[in-house]
Amino acid sequence: MRDIGPLLEEVRGKDPVSALSLLSEKYRDRIVFSTSFGWEDQVITHLIFSNNLPIKVFTLETGRLFPETYYVWNRTLEIYGKKIEPYFPRPDLLQEMVGTKGPSSFYESVENRKECCYIRKIEPLKRALTGNECWITGIRADQSANREEMHEVEWDEGNQLFKYHPLFHWSLDEVKAYIKTNNIVYNTLHDRGFPSIGCAPCTRAVAPGEDFRAGRWWWEDQSKKECGLHATH
Image 1 (cartoon, rainbow, N blue to C red):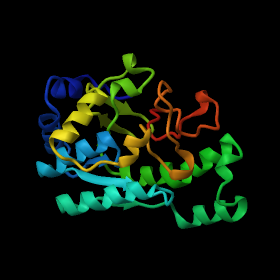
Image 2 (cartoon, one colour; image 1 turned 180 degrees about the horizontal axis):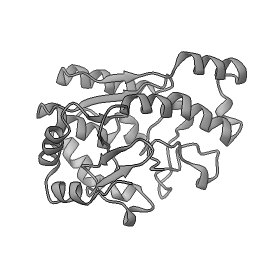
Image 3 (cartoon, rainbow, N blue to C red; image 1 turned 30 degrees about the horizontal axis):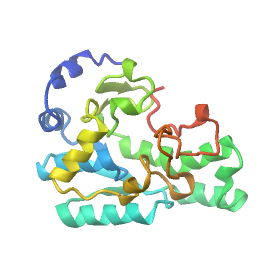
Image 4 (cartoon, rainbow, N blue to C red; image 1 turned 90 degrees about the horizontal axis):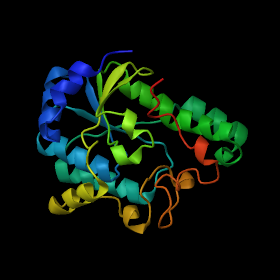
């Protein structure tokens, strides 16, 4: 376990652009940002691309994304003229799973769903993070049940790198206001009750008052709703 104290002190009190600039110099060529084209990620992409920060941007192309997500991806490329590197599932693993269990095995058990998440997201993510020392994410404090124990800087033991959440202290209203003010393209599914947008077969809109994660893997018990992307152990 690495001590996050020194790095936390370096970024504490800095605005996101200043902190990202500092980290991009500190970890030059070894810093990446993962986007899934949601509200927060579009803000961070704008900050990186509009300020020409030397931070590599990548996304996990699971093969099961919403058409609206692909539209945002394409428009983002057109607007900024910058590269977003796609990471795909390994064809051999995907073929084995679908060939053996069919295309919708994730509905049948938690184990099957986690297998699908591993093949389509976890394994590609590990490839994307390999060789890097800092991972930028769109996590905000009010999205996490254990936010009291979290900081804007974390040590990811599983992937052996630091994580920085530039919008950690932002509210959703602040994110949406920034998008509106800066005319940033965003996923219109957000306007239709989708606070969290993942793979199309595994994401639905949520009703007013429901937890923002209720729309992910809604057929499972609440306690089992995670895919492992942001596990720290």
